[in-house]
Image 1 (cartoon, rainbow, N blue to C red):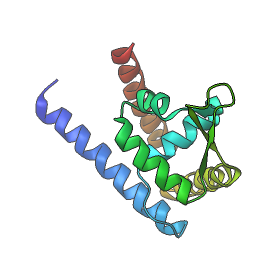
Image 2 (cartoon, helix red, strand yellow):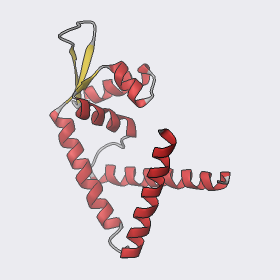
Image 3 (cartoon, rainbow, N blue to C red):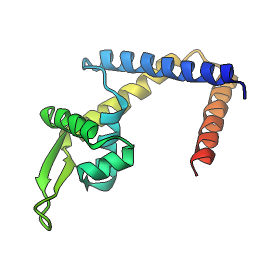
Length: 145
C-alpha cells in the first residue's frame, strides 16, 4: 500500500476521533476525554482490580503516565486505590460506581450521536461503512496476532 494512502487513512481516522470526542464531550457538558482514561476504566471493569504496573503493561504505557492518569481519575471519583489484603506492598485499583454510570452515559450519547449522524445514510451507505470498518478491524487483528 502506498504511503500516501496510509497517511490519508491515519489523518481521516484521527479527524473522525477528534470530531466525535469534541461533540460527545460538549453534549455531556464535560472536559474532552482522551482514550487512555476510558481504557483504564474499561480494563478495571473487565478484570475487577489491577495494579498500576498491570494497567501500564496492558495499555503499553510507562508507569509514570499511568500514575498521572490514575491520580486524575481518583480526583474525579472514577477509581479508588486499596492496599492488597494478601500483600500490603501492593495497591489495587478499582473502578467506582460513578465511573460505570459515566460509561453508560457515554455509550448512550455515542449511540444517540451516531444515529443522528447517519440518519440520512442509505442502506447501501450503511453496508459500505460497516464493510469498511469490519475490513479494517480484521486487518488490524491479523497484524497483531
